[in-house]
Image (tube, rainbow over all chains, first blue to last red; front, top):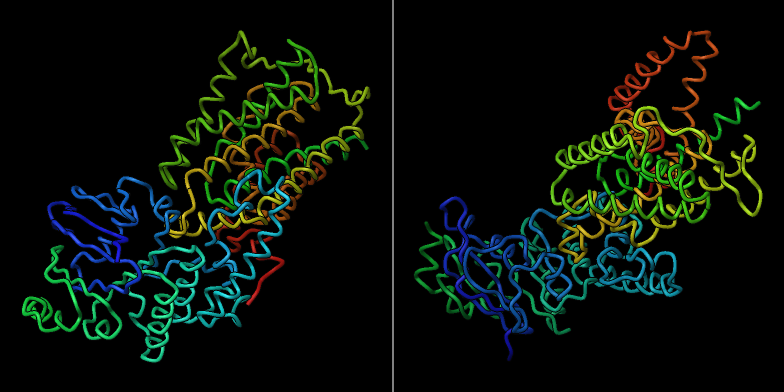
Length: 250
Length: 292
């Protein structure tokens, strides 16, 4: 099993507060890995480092064996790292379908010359539209395709961000709290999709702060607290780890 | 009759300006107060080339587009790393510099005296000189600008622009090179504005720096805002409305000296009223296609 993402000795200080502190981790390909930890433990900060939104003070990140630090966020996205955000980033004022269409990579119609000169532009847009519909079908939103994104419920918007992430055709999906705030039925649905995506060969690295929720779905759990990794491994073992219990009871 | 044609010609020129600024400010969300600078660059390039090197229609207009594009890039590349208000201030600075150059580089631009006697363009052996010819001429350019921009904003390219305007971080996370798009759209908008400048210089046959001041930039921005950002028809309507209102004042029998001031007051109050009661402008982005 090869490693798709690797972080080595990552550190980041915010005005003297160690948000991420000498963190080393690795994610194997085609696994579902969860990152858990109490509030403020540096989970989202770590995601921001991996996706290029923040630059660490120290350390290295490797994606498929290549160092990717100091590259801009859009570069990471084009390499195949898709991400969703905790506070639901979507374009509220355009349709659900347009949100998904936006996410496709390297569209001819997104280049200036392509808009006017390329005969393939129109065809590509039609192909993308079909793909977008099948993605919306996958997340169960195909009947909402023409609605404005702002008219979706919270849970549906989370599903839509997942669809956008899939449209990017990323190999590694970083999902920031994909099930937080969802109803139990919706959580089951989301986890079902994540399992299905794993079957399709994707790797999923997701944040959750509820320990119980992640046990059933994760192949591996990484626990961090105050920016430090305190445990890593099989969910069954993690649950018994005294350090983890302590961090959560505090 | 010529008076009415004159108004229509100006409306066409301002439609080109407002559509190109709408592309930058309405679609991509980059508020710029340097549009009159690019407008002026077009006018000066065409005037100086025609008087010094020869009055070639296509070649000169191309030179104006290229120079405005390059200057657009020069201003865009450093200032697009900053955001919102800071970007407005940077474009304001550029506007002041361009005006300063036009006003003070006397050996080239004749400074405040302006450049008179700009030869009119000749197309397929026909010199465009009458008002009617100019209306057709500028009208064609306005229509071309509209169609060109419409195609751009309705394409996936336009979708990325809106994404950048609404949520830059989301656009980045989806792999869009936000900085590249911003620079590109700024260059495109600046180039189109320079075309309006060429038309203006040819039509009036006299240019001086006072036509390309920061007030002019703000006036163009007002057209975009009052017409409706993110809607090309809004820019057309905005240009029609804001250019005909002062003409109505004229028929009220107001002396010119007063009318000029009243016009400024009118524009100012219109802007305030629109911000208060109809921030999306006459035609908002979703005027024709509200869904859901």
